[in-house]
Length: 291
Image (tube, rainbow, N blue to C red; front, side):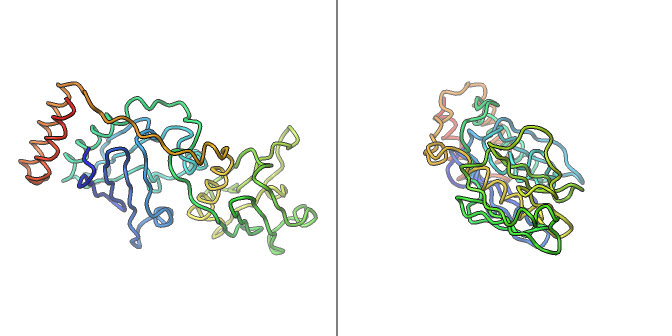
């Protein structure tokens, strides 16, 4: 893929395909999911992608989705499969007239991401939401400064068990994980998991001083999920989170038959007016250089 100019626009987002990553820029329109507006943009290294899927969507659209590797993105690890399709930051709905472009970029991205595997990479490859983070839950206010999490209880919502325990302060060093249950579920909550926790069944979230519970208007996805992701990312060892991301080798010396197929497809896009003369020439030269 070229370093500039390879762009695919879809519903609520634009994907820019670069030599080592995909830069996803989310719209800020009134109909754009609030989670996308909060994320703003995200750079997804090819190493963070395990596979690429393209499927028919509603009303003649096509849906492009990059499937992240487990352990590559703290946001998706925290979400744990609970996001609705419309709020999936790795999903792009493309108008039907751009189907050919979507197929082309899906094939290119699939080739570049090939070989990343499904094994957890040992560190987060996608930049997590930054601290400080805070949000209002139903029974308290949660805050994270990058080093510790604090819960301050509300007298109108907190249980007597939480009032007796008092406001809570949890250094990251004492945590082993984060459990996020979507506020769109009946038992939505955010729970901090601790190394020294007593084995056995966990307390109900509304009774556990290491948890805050959600409710209608309290702990919405676009506030509580980035919070959970930021805390989860802070649990990784400093050497891992601070390490520079290695650049993958370019897709050089690819199969000549694959290159020929890409050029043929590129020519079809050019003839259809979806690729300019300059883009066609530049991309063709790049593909030929990979032989």
